[in-house]
Length: 114
Image (cartoon, rainbow, N blue to C red; front, side, top):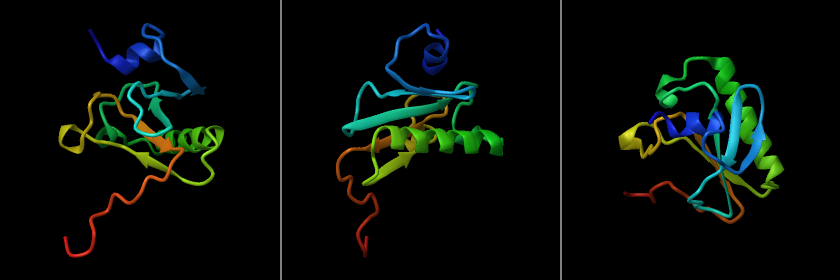
């Protein structure tokens, strides 16, 4: 069947796109974890952040994520997450960044003494 996100890039699977440029595509997550939850992906297939070696592409992904956050009006704050590989919680084997915001997200750090 091929990569789900590559199929979205190719237009074979519909998505609610919010941003696109020559190298990146951003679309709403189908299982949002916050009022605003957008995935930013490279159009080129890379399995995960582990495989990203091109600093220019890394910059383009971060720039696209910041653009999405501004477009979503997340000026009060937002979170950028890259789950990497299975033990890191990655569910789709195509590099993607999660842009989350629209509500207080709290700390993800363990409390002192843990």
